[in-house]
Amino acid sequence: MFEGFKVLFVEDDPPVRMSLAQTLELAGLDVLPCGSAEEALPHVAPGAQLIVVTDVRLPGMDGLSLLDHVVATDPGIPVVLITAHGDVSMAVRAMRAGAYDFIEKPFAPERFVDTALRALDKRVLRVALDDLRAQLQSRTGIESVLLGNSPVMQELRRKIVRLADTSADVMILGETGTGKELVARCLHDHSNRRDRNFVAINCGGLPETLFESELIGHEPGAFTSAAKRRIGKIEHANGGTLLLDEIETMPMQMQIKLLRILQERKIERLGSNEEVPVNLRVVAATKCDLRALSDEGKFRGDLYYRLNVAVLELPSLRERREDIPLLFEHFAGQASARYGLPPPEMTPEKLRELMAHDWPGNVREIRNAADRFVLEIGDLTTATTGVVPVTLAQQMDKVEKALIEQALRQHQGRMPKVMESLGIAKKTLYDKLHRHDIDVDRYR
Image 1 (cartoon, rainbow, N blue to C red):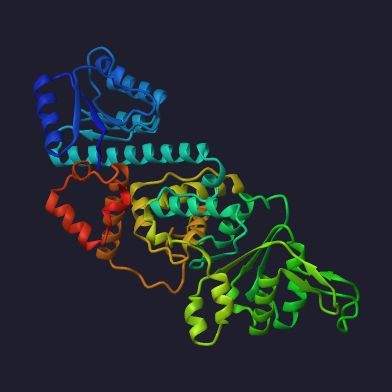
Image 2 (cartoon, rainbow, N blue to C red):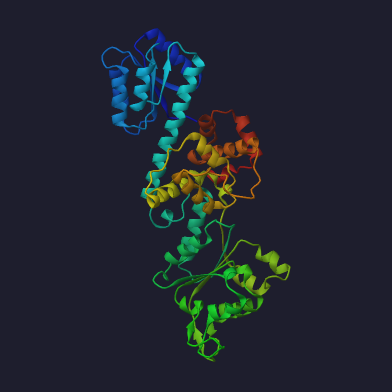
Protein backbone atom coordinates (compact mmCIF):
# COMPACT_ATOMS: atom_id res chain seq x y z
CA MET A 1 0.00 0.00 0.00
CA PHE A 2 2.90 2.35 0.82
CA GLU A 3 5.24 1.14 -1.92
CA GLY A 4 7.78 3.83 -2.73
CA PHE A 5 6.97 5.89 0.39
CA LYS A 6 9.44 6.30 3.26
CA VAL A 7 9.43 7.35 6.90
CA LEU A 8 12.19 9.94 7.39
CA PHE A 9 12.94 9.30 11.08
CA VAL A 10 15.11 11.83 12.94
CA GLU A 11 16.48 10.91 16.40
CA ASP A 12 19.89 11.82 17.78
CA ASP A 13 20.12 8.97 20.35
CA PRO A 14 21.52 5.96 18.41
CA PRO A 15 19.95 3.14 20.54
CA VAL A 16 16.54 4.85 20.48
CA ARG A 17 16.87 5.55 16.76
CA MET A 18 17.72 1.92 16.01
CA SER A 19 14.95 0.54 18.23
CA LEU A 20 12.17 2.74 16.85
CA ALA A 21 13.35 2.30 13.26
CA GLN A 22 13.10 -1.46 13.74
CA THR A 23 9.61 -1.04 15.18
CA LEU A 24 8.52 0.73 12.01
CA GLU A 25 10.27 -1.80 9.76
CA LEU A 26 8.53 -4.69 11.55
CA ALA A 27 5.25 -2.97 10.63
CA GLY A 28 6.29 -3.21 6.96
CA LEU A 29 7.40 0.40 6.53
CA ASP A 30 10.46 1.66 4.66
CA VAL A 31 12.50 3.74 7.13
CA LEU A 32 15.24 6.27 6.45
CA PRO A 33 16.88 6.94 9.88
CA CYS A 34 18.82 10.17 10.44
CA GLY A 35 20.86 11.32 13.44
CA SER A 36 20.18 15.01 12.95
CA ALA A 37 17.88 17.47 11.22
CA GLU A 38 20.77 18.57 9.03
CA GLU A 39 21.18 14.99 7.80
CA ALA A 40 17.46 14.84 6.96
CA LEU A 41 17.29 18.12 5.02
CA PRO A 42 18.53 16.79 1.62
CA HIS A 43 15.68 14.24 1.56
CA VAL A 44 12.97 16.91 1.93
CA ALA A 45 11.85 18.15 -1.49
CA PRO A 46 8.58 19.21 -3.14
CA GLY A 47 6.54 16.12 -3.95
CA ALA A 48 8.80 13.80 -1.91
CA GLN A 49 7.09 10.49 -1.17
CA LEU A 50 7.75 10.49 2.54
CA ILE A 51 6.64 11.60 5.97
CA VAL A 52 8.86 13.08 8.66
CA VAL A 53 8.92 11.75 12.23
CA THR A 54 11.27 13.78 14.38
CA ASP A 55 12.21 14.35 17.97
CA VAL A 56 11.79 17.98 18.97
CA ARG A 57 14.98 18.20 21.01
CA LEU A 58 17.93 17.75 18.65
CA PRO A 59 21.48 19.12 18.59
CA GLY A 60 21.92 21.94 16.07
CA MET A 61 18.68 22.46 14.14
CA ASP A 62 15.83 21.30 16.38
CA GLY A 63 12.62 19.52 15.37
CA LEU A 64 10.59 22.74 15.25
CA SER A 65 13.03 24.33 12.81
CA LEU A 66 12.88 21.16 10.72
CA LEU A 67 9.09 21.44 10.78
CA ASP A 68 9.30 25.01 9.47
CA HIS A 69 11.62 23.87 6.67
CA VAL A 70 9.32 21.01 5.64
CA VAL A 71 6.22 23.23 5.66
CA ALA A 72 8.02 25.84 3.56
CA THR A 73 9.23 23.18 1.11
CA ASP A 74 6.02 21.17 0.77
CA PRO A 75 3.18 21.73 3.24
CA GLY A 76 1.66 18.44 2.11
CA ILE A 77 4.42 16.39 3.79
CA PRO A 78 3.11 15.28 7.22
CA VAL A 79 5.44 15.94 10.15
CA VAL A 80 5.02 14.00 13.39
CA LEU A 81 6.79 15.45 16.44
CA ILE A 82 8.08 13.37 19.35
CA THR A 83 7.94 15.51 22.48
CA ALA A 84 9.13 15.13 26.05
CA HIS A 85 6.70 15.06 28.94
CA GLY A 86 5.49 18.57 29.70
CA ASP A 87 5.96 19.89 26.15
CA VAL A 88 2.31 19.42 25.13
CA SER A 89 1.53 23.14 24.89
CA MET A 90 4.55 23.59 22.64
CA ALA A 91 3.41 20.65 20.50
CA VAL A 92 -0.06 22.13 20.12
CA ARG A 93 1.48 25.38 18.89
CA ALA A 94 3.58 23.36 16.46
CA MET A 95 0.45 21.68 15.08
CA ARG A 96 -1.01 25.09 14.44
CA ALA A 97 2.18 25.83 12.51
CA GLY A 98 1.62 22.81 10.28
CA ALA A 99 2.60 19.66 12.19
CA TYR A 100 0.44 16.61 11.47
CA ASP A 101 0.51 15.13 14.98
CA PHE A 102 2.66 14.71 18.06
CA ILE A 103 3.53 11.81 20.35
CA GLU A 104 4.41 12.43 23.97
CA LYS A 105 7.13 10.34 25.61
CA PRO A 106 6.89 7.69 26.90
CA PHE A 107 4.64 6.04 24.32
CA ALA A 108 3.61 2.52 23.38
CA PRO A 109 5.14 1.11 20.15
CA GLU A 110 1.60 0.52 18.83
CA ARG A 111 0.77 4.21 19.19
CA PHE A 112 4.00 5.14 17.42
CA VAL A 113 3.29 2.80 14.48
CA ASP A 114 -0.38 3.81 14.25
CA THR A 115 0.51 7.51 14.04
CA ALA A 116 3.08 6.83 11.30
CA LEU A 117 0.56 4.75 9.35
CA ARG A 118 -2.07 7.49 9.51
CA ALA A 119 0.47 10.08 8.39
CA LEU A 120 1.55 7.85 5.50
CA ASP A 121 -2.09 7.29 4.54
CA LYS A 122 -2.51 11.05 4.34
CA ARG A 123 0.67 11.51 2.30
CA VAL A 124 -0.18 8.74 -0.17
CA LEU A 125 -3.58 10.35 -0.74
CA ARG A 126 -2.07 13.81 -1.17
CA VAL A 127 0.46 12.57 -3.75
CA ALA A 128 -2.32 10.69 -5.57
CA LEU A 129 -4.52 13.81 -5.66
CA ASP A 130 -1.64 15.94 -6.94
CA ASP A 131 -1.09 13.34 -9.66
CA LEU A 132 -4.79 13.39 -10.57
CA ARG A 133 -4.76 17.19 -10.81
CA ALA A 134 -1.70 17.05 -13.05
CA GLN A 135 -3.45 14.48 -15.23
CA LEU A 136 -6.54 16.65 -15.50
CA GLN A 137 -4.49 19.70 -16.49
CA SER A 138 -2.47 17.82 -19.12
CA ARG A 139 -5.37 16.11 -20.87
CA THR A 140 -6.40 17.35 -24.29
CA GLY A 141 -8.93 16.37 -26.93
CA ILE A 142 -11.36 13.58 -26.15
CA GLU A 143 -9.39 12.58 -23.03
CA SER A 144 -10.25 15.94 -21.45
CA VAL A 145 -13.97 15.31 -22.00
CA LEU A 146 -14.44 11.58 -21.43
CA LEU A 147 -12.40 11.12 -18.28
CA GLY A 148 -11.07 7.80 -17.07
CA ASN A 149 -7.98 5.62 -17.15
CA SER A 150 -9.83 2.31 -16.92
CA PRO A 151 -9.46 -0.12 -19.85
CA VAL A 152 -13.18 0.20 -20.69
CA MET A 153 -12.91 3.99 -21.02
CA GLN A 154 -9.73 3.79 -23.08
CA GLU A 155 -11.50 1.37 -25.44
CA LEU A 156 -14.60 3.59 -25.57
CA ARG A 157 -12.51 6.61 -26.61
CA ARG A 158 -10.79 4.54 -29.31
CA LYS A 159 -14.17 3.44 -30.70
CA ILE A 160 -15.49 7.00 -30.75
CA VAL A 161 -12.47 8.32 -32.62
CA ARG A 162 -12.70 5.41 -35.07
CA LEU A 163 -16.41 6.01 -35.73
CA ALA A 164 -16.38 9.80 -35.68
CA ASP A 165 -15.50 10.47 -39.32
CA THR A 166 -17.62 7.68 -40.74
CA SER A 167 -21.20 8.21 -41.91
CA ALA A 168 -22.53 5.39 -39.71
CA ASP A 169 -25.50 6.03 -37.44
CA VAL A 170 -24.72 5.06 -33.87
CA MET A 171 -26.66 3.56 -30.98
CA ILE A 172 -25.47 4.38 -27.46
CA LEU A 173 -26.44 2.04 -24.63
CA GLY A 174 -25.97 2.95 -21.00
CA GLU A 175 -27.59 3.36 -17.62
CA THR A 176 -28.97 6.69 -16.48
CA GLY A 177 -26.17 9.14 -15.74
CA THR A 178 -23.40 7.38 -17.69
CA GLY A 179 -22.97 10.30 -20.11
CA LYS A 180 -24.78 9.25 -23.28
CA GLU A 181 -25.27 12.82 -24.53
CA LEU A 182 -21.63 13.62 -23.77
CA VAL A 183 -20.53 10.65 -25.90
CA ALA A 184 -22.84 11.80 -28.72
CA ARG A 185 -21.25 15.26 -28.57
CA CYS A 186 -17.79 13.70 -28.72
CA LEU A 187 -18.81 11.81 -31.86
CA HIS A 188 -19.95 15.09 -33.39
CA ASP A 189 -17.00 17.22 -32.21
CA HIS A 190 -14.41 14.76 -33.55
CA SER A 191 -16.11 14.31 -36.91
CA ASN A 192 -16.04 16.30 -40.14
CA ARG A 193 -19.55 17.48 -39.16
CA ARG A 194 -18.25 19.49 -36.21
CA ASP A 195 -18.93 22.86 -37.91
CA ARG A 196 -22.62 22.05 -38.40
CA ASN A 197 -25.40 21.74 -35.83
CA PHE A 198 -25.54 19.22 -33.02
CA VAL A 199 -29.23 18.81 -32.21
CA ALA A 200 -30.42 16.83 -29.18
CA ILE A 201 -34.00 15.89 -28.54
CA ASN A 202 -35.39 13.92 -25.60
CA CYS A 203 -38.03 11.64 -27.03
CA GLY A 204 -39.51 11.09 -23.59
CA GLY A 205 -40.10 14.80 -23.06
CA LEU A 206 -42.27 15.44 -26.14
CA PRO A 207 -46.06 15.07 -26.22
CA GLU A 208 -47.02 12.52 -28.86
CA THR A 209 -49.17 15.09 -30.65
CA LEU A 210 -46.14 17.35 -31.25
CA PHE A 211 -43.64 14.66 -32.11
CA GLU A 212 -43.90 14.77 -35.89
CA SER A 213 -44.01 18.56 -36.02
CA GLU A 214 -40.93 18.85 -33.79
CA LEU A 215 -38.89 16.28 -35.69
CA ILE A 216 -39.98 16.89 -39.29
CA GLY A 217 -41.42 20.42 -39.22
CA HIS A 218 -44.51 21.80 -40.93
CA GLU A 219 -45.73 24.30 -43.51
CA PRO A 220 -48.12 27.20 -42.75
CA GLY A 221 -51.67 25.93 -42.45
CA ALA A 222 -50.65 22.28 -42.00
CA PHE A 223 -52.89 22.28 -38.93
CA THR A 224 -54.95 24.83 -37.03
CA SER A 225 -52.17 26.49 -35.03
CA ALA A 226 -49.53 26.30 -37.78
CA ALA A 227 -49.26 30.00 -38.64
CA LYS A 228 -45.84 29.83 -40.25
CA ARG A 229 -43.28 27.35 -41.54
CA ARG A 230 -41.36 25.43 -38.88
CA ILE A 231 -38.04 23.75 -39.60
CA GLY A 232 -37.95 20.46 -37.66
CA LYS A 233 -35.08 19.06 -35.66
CA ILE A 234 -34.03 16.66 -38.42
CA GLU A 235 -33.74 19.40 -41.01
CA HIS A 236 -32.02 21.71 -38.51
CA ALA A 237 -29.39 19.00 -37.99
CA ASN A 238 -28.77 18.71 -41.75
CA GLY A 239 -25.04 18.33 -42.28
CA GLY A 240 -24.54 17.68 -38.57
CA THR A 241 -25.69 15.26 -35.89
CA LEU A 242 -29.11 14.45 -34.43
CA LEU A 243 -29.28 12.82 -31.01
CA LEU A 244 -32.51 10.99 -30.21
CA ASP A 245 -32.30 10.40 -26.47
CA GLU A 246 -34.58 7.86 -24.78
CA ILE A 247 -35.52 6.55 -28.22
CA GLU A 248 -37.42 3.69 -26.58
CA THR A 249 -40.19 6.21 -25.75
CA MET A 250 -40.70 7.26 -29.39
CA PRO A 251 -44.33 6.66 -30.51
CA MET A 252 -44.72 3.60 -32.75
CA GLN A 253 -46.12 5.65 -35.65
CA MET A 254 -43.11 7.96 -35.50
CA GLN A 255 -40.76 4.97 -35.46
CA ILE A 256 -42.14 3.98 -38.88
CA LYS A 257 -41.43 7.46 -40.27
CA LEU A 258 -37.96 7.56 -38.70
CA LEU A 259 -37.10 4.24 -40.34
CA ARG A 260 -38.06 5.62 -43.73
CA ILE A 261 -36.02 8.78 -43.13
CA LEU A 262 -32.98 6.71 -42.15
CA GLN A 263 -33.31 4.61 -45.30
CA GLU A 264 -34.04 7.40 -47.80
CA ARG A 265 -32.40 10.41 -46.11
CA LYS A 266 -35.35 12.60 -47.11
CA ILE A 267 -38.16 14.30 -45.20
CA GLU A 268 -41.50 15.84 -46.09
CA ARG A 269 -42.66 18.62 -43.80
CA LEU A 270 -46.26 18.35 -42.64
CA GLY A 271 -48.47 20.06 -45.20
CA SER A 272 -45.88 19.76 -47.99
CA ASN A 273 -45.42 17.39 -50.92
CA GLU A 274 -41.82 18.43 -51.45
CA GLU A 275 -39.06 16.07 -50.33
CA VAL A 276 -36.08 17.70 -48.62
CA PRO A 277 -32.79 15.73 -48.75
CA VAL A 278 -31.00 15.50 -45.40
CA ASN A 279 -27.43 14.48 -44.74
CA LEU A 280 -26.98 13.84 -41.06
CA ARG A 281 -25.75 11.32 -38.56
CA VAL A 282 -28.42 9.94 -36.26
CA VAL A 283 -27.34 8.92 -32.77
CA ALA A 284 -29.93 6.97 -30.78
CA ALA A 285 -29.45 6.71 -27.02
CA THR A 286 -31.24 4.36 -24.66
CA LYS A 287 -30.98 2.78 -21.24
CA CYS A 288 -33.25 -0.11 -22.28
CA ASP A 289 -32.73 -3.40 -24.07
CA LEU A 290 -34.36 -2.52 -27.41
CA ARG A 291 -34.09 -6.12 -28.57
CA ALA A 292 -36.22 -7.25 -25.64
CA LEU A 293 -38.70 -4.41 -26.26
CA SER A 294 -38.83 -5.45 -29.91
CA ASP A 295 -39.60 -9.04 -28.93
CA GLU A 296 -42.41 -7.76 -26.72
CA GLY A 297 -43.84 -5.64 -29.55
CA LYS A 298 -43.02 -2.38 -27.76
CA PHE A 299 -40.37 -1.23 -30.27
CA ARG A 300 -40.23 -1.84 -33.99
CA GLY A 301 -37.87 -4.67 -34.84
CA ASP A 302 -36.95 -3.23 -38.26
CA LEU A 303 -35.92 0.08 -36.66
CA TYR A 304 -33.94 -1.75 -34.01
CA TYR A 305 -31.95 -3.66 -36.62
CA ARG A 306 -31.46 -0.48 -38.66
CA LEU A 307 -29.96 1.26 -35.61
CA ASN A 308 -28.05 -1.74 -34.25
CA VAL A 309 -25.01 -1.41 -36.53
CA ALA A 310 -22.47 0.76 -34.73
CA VAL A 311 -23.09 0.34 -30.99
CA LEU A 312 -21.31 2.05 -28.11
CA GLU A 313 -21.91 0.53 -24.69
CA LEU A 314 -21.17 2.87 -21.79
CA PRO A 315 -19.91 1.24 -18.59
CA SER A 316 -21.55 2.00 -15.28
CA LEU A 317 -19.37 3.66 -12.67
CA ARG A 318 -19.31 0.52 -10.52
CA GLU A 319 -17.69 -1.26 -13.50
CA ARG A 320 -14.81 1.23 -13.54
CA ARG A 321 -14.23 2.06 -9.88
CA GLU A 322 -10.61 2.97 -10.55
CA ASP A 323 -11.90 6.11 -12.31
CA ILE A 324 -13.82 7.35 -9.24
CA PRO A 325 -10.97 9.45 -7.71
CA LEU A 326 -10.22 11.15 -11.05
CA LEU A 327 -13.88 11.96 -11.72
CA PHE A 328 -14.49 13.18 -8.18
CA GLU A 329 -11.44 15.43 -8.26
CA HIS A 330 -12.54 16.83 -11.64
CA PHE A 331 -16.06 17.64 -10.46
CA ALA A 332 -14.86 18.99 -7.10
CA GLY A 333 -12.57 21.37 -8.99
CA GLN A 334 -15.47 22.52 -11.16
CA ALA A 335 -17.72 22.98 -8.12
CA SER A 336 -15.00 24.91 -6.30
CA ALA A 337 -14.68 27.35 -9.22
CA ARG A 338 -18.46 27.61 -9.65
CA TYR A 339 -19.20 28.38 -6.00
CA GLY A 340 -16.03 30.35 -5.27
CA LEU A 341 -15.12 27.98 -2.41
CA PRO A 342 -11.97 25.96 -1.78
CA PRO A 343 -12.63 22.22 -1.70
CA PRO A 344 -12.36 20.68 1.79
CA GLU A 345 -9.52 18.30 2.52
CA MET A 346 -10.00 14.83 1.09
CA THR A 347 -9.30 12.17 3.72
CA PRO A 348 -8.55 8.46 3.31
CA GLU A 349 -11.86 7.72 5.05
CA LYS A 350 -13.83 9.81 2.56
CA LEU A 351 -11.99 8.19 -0.36
CA ARG A 352 -12.84 4.73 0.97
CA GLU A 353 -16.47 5.85 1.24
CA LEU A 354 -16.41 6.95 -2.40
CA MET A 355 -14.80 3.72 -3.55
CA ALA A 356 -17.25 1.52 -1.62
CA HIS A 357 -20.43 3.23 -2.88
CA ASP A 358 -22.36 1.60 -5.74
CA TRP A 359 -23.16 4.87 -7.59
CA PRO A 360 -26.57 3.90 -9.03
CA GLY A 361 -26.76 7.39 -10.56
CA ASN A 362 -23.31 6.93 -12.14
CA VAL A 363 -21.36 10.02 -13.26
CA ARG A 364 -24.30 12.33 -12.62
CA GLU A 365 -24.45 11.15 -9.02
CA ILE A 366 -20.71 11.56 -8.40
CA ARG A 367 -20.92 15.10 -9.79
CA ASN A 368 -23.68 15.89 -7.26
CA ALA A 369 -21.59 14.32 -4.49
CA ALA A 370 -18.67 16.57 -5.44
CA ASP A 371 -20.97 19.60 -5.19
CA ARG A 372 -22.06 18.55 -1.69
CA PHE A 373 -18.42 17.97 -0.76
CA VAL A 374 -17.42 21.51 -1.75
CA LEU A 375 -20.51 23.06 -0.16
CA GLU A 376 -19.98 20.86 2.92
CA ILE A 377 -23.65 19.91 3.14
CA GLY A 378 -24.88 16.38 3.72
CA ASP A 379 -22.99 13.12 3.31
CA LEU A 380 -21.06 12.24 0.18
CA THR A 381 -22.91 9.10 -0.80
CA THR A 382 -26.21 8.94 1.07
CA ALA A 383 -28.25 11.57 -0.76
CA THR A 384 -29.62 9.11 -3.32
CA THR A 385 -33.03 7.89 -2.20
CA GLY A 386 -34.35 4.41 -2.72
CA VAL A 387 -30.91 2.80 -2.61
CA VAL A 388 -30.61 -0.35 -0.52
CA PRO A 389 -27.66 0.12 1.88
CA VAL A 390 -24.80 -2.34 1.52
CA THR A 391 -23.22 -4.15 4.43
CA LEU A 392 -19.72 -3.44 5.73
CA ALA A 393 -18.49 -6.71 4.24
CA GLN A 394 -19.89 -5.75 0.83
CA GLN A 395 -18.24 -2.32 1.04
CA MET A 396 -14.89 -3.87 1.97
CA ASP A 397 -15.19 -6.32 -0.94
CA LYS A 398 -15.67 -3.42 -3.34
CA VAL A 399 -12.70 -1.52 -1.93
CA GLU A 400 -10.54 -4.67 -2.10
CA LYS A 401 -11.50 -5.30 -5.73
CA ALA A 402 -10.75 -1.68 -6.67
CA LEU A 403 -7.31 -1.80 -5.01
CA ILE A 404 -6.41 -5.07 -6.78
CA GLU A 405 -7.51 -3.65 -10.15
CA GLN A 406 -5.51 -0.48 -9.47
CA ALA A 407 -2.37 -2.55 -8.73
CA LEU A 408 -2.90 -4.67 -11.87
CA ARG A 409 -3.19 -1.56 -14.00
CA GLN A 410 -0.18 0.10 -12.37
CA HIS A 411 2.06 -2.94 -12.99
CA GLN A 412 0.54 -3.98 -16.37
CA GLY A 413 -0.67 -7.29 -14.95
CA ARG A 414 2.81 -8.43 -13.81
CA MET A 415 1.82 -10.70 -10.94
CA PRO A 416 5.07 -10.62 -8.89
CA LYS A 417 4.92 -6.81 -8.81
CA VAL A 418 1.21 -6.88 -7.96
CA MET A 419 1.81 -9.30 -5.07
CA GLU A 420 4.66 -7.15 -3.80
CA SER A 421 2.71 -3.89 -3.94
CA LEU A 422 -0.33 -5.42 -2.23
CA GLY A 423 1.78 -7.34 0.29
CA ILE A 424 -0.05 -10.64 -0.20
CA ALA A 425 0.97 -14.18 -1.13
CA LYS A 426 0.44 -15.71 -4.57
CA LYS A 427 -2.32 -18.10 -3.49
CA THR A 428 -4.14 -15.31 -1.63
CA LEU A 429 -4.00 -13.04 -4.68
CA TYR A 430 -5.29 -15.72 -7.04
CA ASP A 431 -8.10 -16.59 -4.62
CA LYS A 432 -9.14 -12.95 -4.56
CA LEU A 433 -8.93 -12.65 -8.36
CA HIS A 434 -11.27 -15.63 -8.66
CA ARG A 435 -13.66 -14.34 -5.98
CA HIS A 436 -13.91 -10.89 -7.56
CA ASP A 437 -14.04 -12.29 -11.12
CA ILE A 438 -11.10 -10.12 -12.26
CA ASP A 439 -9.66 -10.84 -15.70
CA VAL A 440 -5.89 -10.25 -15.44
CA ASP A 441 -5.43 -10.33 -19.24
CA ARG A 442 -7.30 -7.00 -19.51
CA TYR A 443 -4.38 -5.27 -17.82
CA ARG A 444 -1.51 -6.79 -19.81
